[in-house]
Length: 68
Image (cartoon, rainbow, N blue to C red):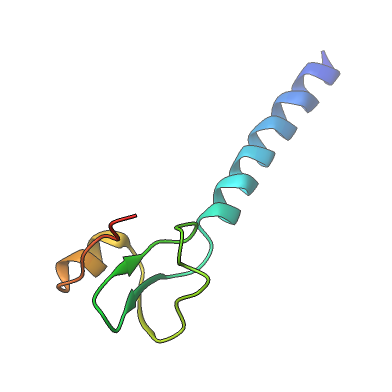
């Protein structure tokens, strides 16, 4: 019984860890107005940007989603 409980605790804690790692960092709105979410194709390459807490905030500020 303890082993099952321990396995469930580890499963839930690891799933939460994976979510935070993929969503790490701000949404970046580039100078050209493209909103790059963490994990997107050009996120790491985007250097000159305005940070936003959510993708929705970035889009509401006049940004757009990347075509790829």
